[in-house]
Length: 313
Image (cartoon, rainbow, N blue to C red; front, side):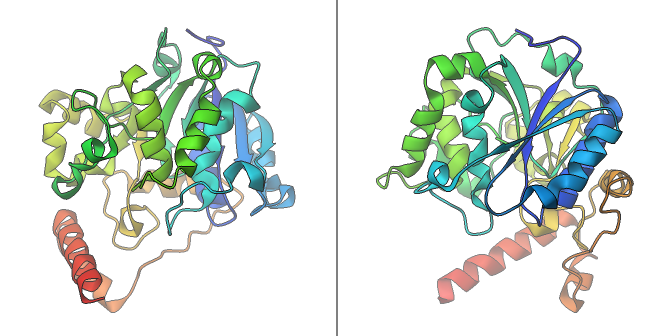
């Protein structure tokens, strides 16, 4: 199934803090697909004046920009994460917001496009709700999908890159079902929107090669070997189509501790946006020392510190 073989429709969303990162992502996208149609999701935390420079950048590069407002009622009562704003839920309403489209590709703001997305866009979704890459889970949370209620034979996917079959989701009233799941007080969610998408869509998910969502975990977590073959990991890490800087602050390219091999691409694309100056976060005496360690060791130390801090509380 393909909506239009030559024009790609992309959905994304951002608040004021993430607008510059969203701009870097869209700049990378438009460098490969200058005529892409961008569907920007926003709520009351940001105004049209705030993202006007983003819209101007998109149109100046040849793309089309359309903004879609999500009101407070649509996100009221949905479970949240402390460090992530409610805009993580906006994507569940895409089937209703875009009634004329058959499919759309959703991209998180902490992604970068490194290659043509046409092979992904032209995939035949048939009766699948979504196409997505399996999420690499660290050993201490690998139990979570089964605890959530996902059958053991169905893999848990990452929601940072999603090719949605909007027709199939509309036919199944998925926006209402996803919202109801997210508001269920009896259901405890670790990664709220991603958990909801997995429970309701994972049995009709087309599994993608990891190069379509090349997560940080492929570079830093040994557990990635449990999820993908050696050739898949090698292809994804060497020639990623979509990079995804998922995870906590040190995983982001604008963080001082980040040493991702493709970090420079973020700065390259950011320099061509209305927000070219990058504020490097996380630079403190302790982090200068941590940066001397391999990234995996740094992650282990920080996670151990977080567990100790929680235990002392």
